Image 1 (tube, rainbow, N blue to C red):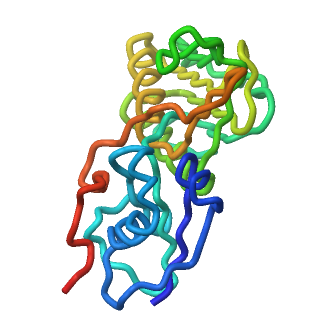
Image 2 (cartoon, rainbow, N blue to C red; image 1 turned 120 degrees about the horizontal axis):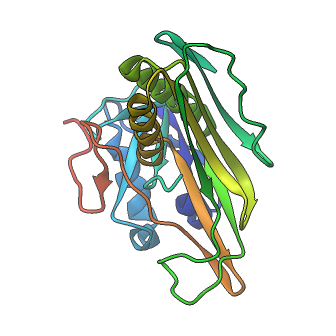
Length: 243
């Protein structure tokens, strides 16, 4: 059976393409994609010890069965409008400077909390080197869906009156914002807690990757994997095929 494979960040850079078609035995599981490609590209072991798998835009474990025509995404650790509850939320992926923040007109709002993630000129991964700019890449369809899901969950859990989550893609100069989260609630505690939840969950579970550029080169920033049953597949994993 044939499946479509999507590659991102360092994996795509090393492979030299962002997608390919792969023929697998009937009954193969999602982890077989990583195993087959990793055997053909041993240099991928230098990128990291694990990838996360997504099948048709949803996180899946390595044992998830595949069918012909599925789309399997290999996701390195992530560095990077919907409605729910009684409030309104807006999520977006944009290129270029972030748009102006929303101006909510709601007499029930008693507090707003705003987080801006700013591109800085240094990184712990390269002490002494000056970062010149950042570049963000995403699995855009899945990232948009994940942003909306996070917004829905935060709005429902904290009874928000409003929420905005916007993330830039492409080049971001040092000193400019790459991401913004704003929460609006009746009380400050809910606004603070929801804002922290939203940005922390975004960083862990939205498939966005960051590349840092220096005068003498560049590298992909380290990131995180989301917790849950669809855990990462490491370089030593086996048994991805069903017998």
